[in-house]
Image 1 (cartoon, one colour):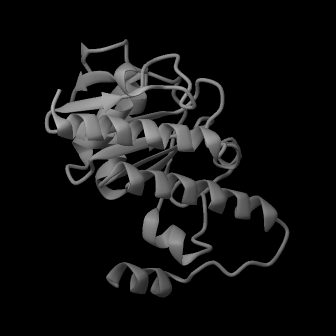
Image 2 (tube, helix red, strand yellow; image 1 turned 180 degrees about the vertical axis):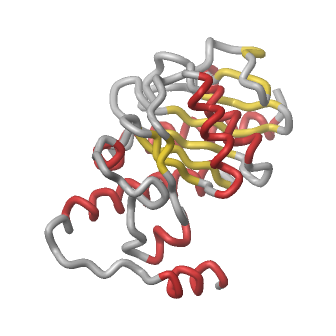
Length: 209
């Protein structure tokens, strides 16, 4: 194992423990992956992100086929679909965080923009996050649907499931996942109040900057 792989394994584990400690996952839910050229490290099936260790990570190829280590999460194919669709991405974080998962269960969501851009940080770290229709976890159809949307969107909200985000690093993916959860929390806190999300011009200015 190279020193680069060791560092990447430690980054995945640190993010996993942080996600669990911050309540972005519970039990054995959620998964994190990081790309190493044509191979992908991913948290294993049935593991808690709060206790997973570096030597427990699974290794798959970019089609999600198991190469080495423990059996990967059944959602590994979803991670590799996101990475194939976004060559700029090096990591994927998928959580079942409470408020974002709650939003994913609401009826009559705007499928293109289920969460408003309440803050500049959501606009910068997440952008737009369309809804992917419901599929059972691990269903190949979910990976196919995500791969169709991911080239234009770094984050997706999986219906009756939770958010997934791809980014240039594990840290950036974690930051975006946490921003999604905090925006979902604001979404419920502000329900029934008049709100002023950022305008399209304000969002465009942030992206241009």
